[in-house]
Image 1 (cartoon, each protein chain N blue to C red):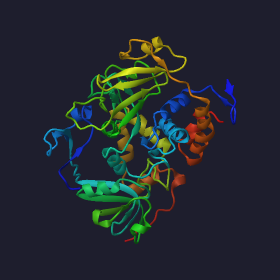
Image 2: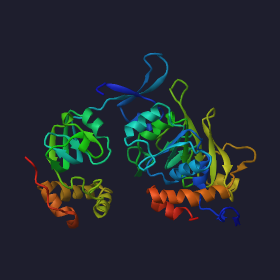
Image 3: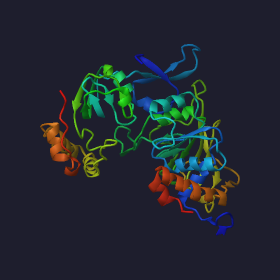
Image 4: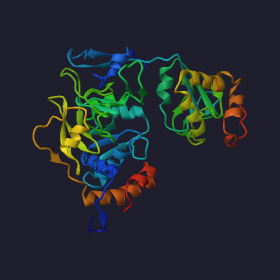
Length: 253
Length: 178
């Protein structure tokens, strides 16, 4: 299907394009929003938001030209000062308590089956950024679990612990979850087009926390897809910001 | 910084804390209530890092922006390996991070010192070698074999470069200025 506009735009979209658009909607104008290294989808979402509803957002896309400084020391203290409005991060496992795991898989922590990059930054930023959006490109029972094998970043904390911000949402190719801070649980927030509640339940390893009907995620609009394909994609290619990924994963205008 | 420990906002509830003894929970000494993580300062005996250029006094131009200064400040002794030794290097000549000689104890001329990883502005990672490294890291026996071949059975850095750095990368080695 296409709609008329300055240019015709196909309303068909890939999973990567969908997740990019959903992440861009989380960015607020005027805030400092950031993502880490090796984060193609949120990087694209940040750039898209700046073209659409957040022209005054300040972006930090680590290891690209879109960063105000070079050292992780500066990034660390910017986060510690509470100046990050939004941070995007991915985890190998995400659990119903809002914890994520970026360290290792396996029941015995001394003898993991697989190890991942791990890191210290995520567990720190989870407390400092006002909102953290966790994403995962795979929505299955092995990635969305009741309890992660290793807590790299903790979803909740006792009241007496100093904390500036919390997990906000989890975004997958099938659904959005929001974090219920009082219950310290993730709850299904909306289901992306073409999926059903049963499919989400079947592919999620934790209780969805819903009783009534669940909202449908608004599909990417013509305006969002047009800006993504005709402005953000060329900009990424020109600036060497995940250029090869952009060429491959975002449709050309 | 030289302080014995430093508070960090975050990390509470992670398994990093259950598995490390250099980060603990402690109350705010001023309000006596609010809890945060306190991390013990790291004080390495020796730091070794590879850079683009260094001079004979130990002034260093890293070649790209990197956290070398905090590493050098934290460590009791600092050894720098460099692609190139130059006669004199000032902060204004530096590319990327500059480390002043007051923080550096020794400079070693080591062209291709990053191999099989890459060196910004000079050479890319050696993908073929990296794949061997990854394959070798899957078992202790294979990794021991890797270390024997590329580390223990190699007599000198010059021999390593001669035998293992791709031939087409090798330029005449710059003479060390004494």
